[in-house]
Image (cartoon, rainbow, N blue to C red; front, top):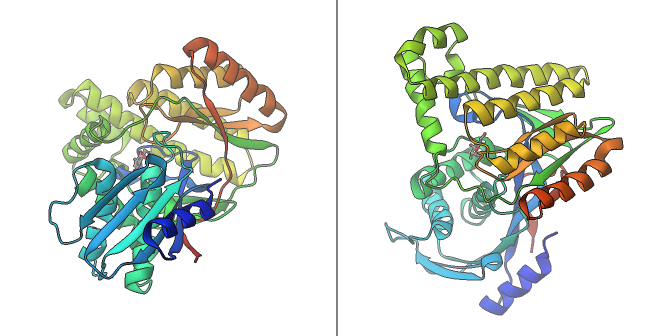
Length: 380
Ligand code: GAF
């Protein structure tokens, strides 16, 4: 739980007045991993963990910020074309600059922010940060003129241009559009989305954080994306969403084995998202779980974004009878997402925690999933 009063107090000590409070959540994703930048479907929901900012206009061209969790104080000038060099500061600088480029007359502001989205856990703390600032700046300087999808795209543009992660739209979409108790299926090609109420009878979702820090900045994430783009281009389609299995097999002799396996994973994941939608219509959660295991196999063996600790957690989940388990998010560490029968829940979390500690000598963290609302103004 975030102590909003503590953030407000910090703001008033630092800046001698009161600010307005905004929040934006992290996300989970049931299925549909690495499909967003391939024009496919994703199935995320916002979580109850958020980034919260207390913010007020300061009447000059400077942004003065204090990131509570890191005890990091920094300032930059909105008109400086270079901006700060540290990655964390570039998120805020990038958001301000991209909002300006989208026609919002951003002026100087003071801000104190913090949150409870675990960093490097694959729950998208960076999208939460971007969407929190998008919502705040749109409200304070733009009269709420920009719609939620536009704000999500501004967050994505910040990742691309200021941080260098060529991410898709899933995380920012989820943070902006989340609704308590619902997951969302987004078609990343058309931008259409539908809410799926998520009240699985007899099951719960729980994350297990391996505490292996996942880091997408400067990571092989962009390499995966480039592989997909190479194959799509050879197939003569805009994204792998429009590449058939047959076409991929035709191309096989011309592409590297690595590119082939990455594309094979994406095509499989496209089918799995649709299979999960069918299963959800029938309340068949065992089938949802089977698809999650298949996704993990593809992410681990073909897409190669898992690691020893995460594979261990998924194997343990399977051994203990958990219905579905897989690595969640961009990969290279972070959390597994697990679909667990209610009666198995306590045994699972206790056993997996104990065994993980014995095997790797570190504690994993159990994070129960509560599906929450998207980015919003909380008040004064
Ligand atoms: C990260 C990215 F930011 C998303 O856009 C998405 O590609 C995800 O990895 C993998 O599904 O969270």
